[in-house]
Length: 364
Image 1 (cartoon, helix red, strand yellow):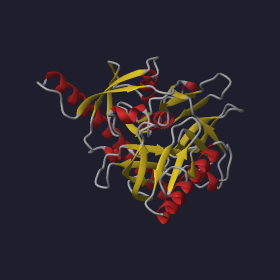
Image 2 (cartoon, helix red, strand yellow):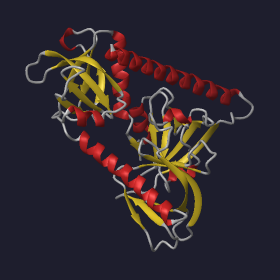
Image 3 (tube, one colour):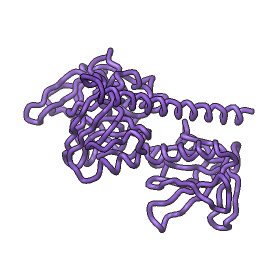
Image 4 (cartoon, helix red, strand yellow):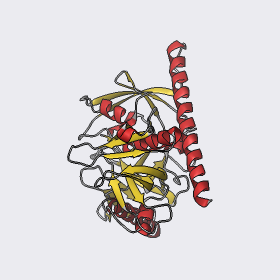
């Protein structure tokens, strides 16, 4: 009964996400139509120019049909362009992408131009919580910090409100009353260290190889130590997550830690790689990794497929009516075949797989 209730909640959640995506699509199209026929542009619409520097634009996108700006890296072209977290991208260099998938939008953005002209629909803070990760609404830690920004030879310290969320992402705002972040830093592969020679007391640096660092400072030693502790813990959690995703067969306890709040879960019929026979498996999808279990109460995972770079499509494998396949980016990699019992379940898995595979692709 618990498994059934959980499955129903998962299906309901997926249906609500699909409905919200449809509402966003309709809202964007309506806003675009108003902009064309009105005497003056809709105040929530804006054209933003983002020029690539040091090989990156500096922003991330989330979702599909439409895609939404989910994060803006600090001290990058995106941060100074006027682009905001929560902006829905309508067109890129005059190419309408409102009905394009996540991967299609990424391809268009990487078509060769070092300048992106983005027409965006500004959600005016209403949809900000939607584009954040589940559980991100309640911060792990928050408070004012000083941020070093501007040109290197004329950099200035400005005070900003910082929130470390449960998605291990550090957001910063103009002040503690704003709901729209000025930017965000996903703490993957970052290091944090004290900077006694920065010219400001209680300062520290967040940096990683190949990325612009974020230089911060607290008002006192106690505050600096607290921030260093919570940021270090968040970086460590991200490092552990990456390590888990690289291991193909761990115990359920470890696998469960890596797949909290899964993108999709339930039973699928899977075509065996060795014996070419269909087997019923309980599957859990999280961050483009698909975990296989004997059943929903198994003590250990049978295996895991890392689907980064893969794509999904319909299939006629084995003559199964509701079949689909997951194709690898290279021929030498493994090909996966599945089928479901109903068309609705198939659509649920196809949508979740496309979302999970594409969600972490970075524009830049």
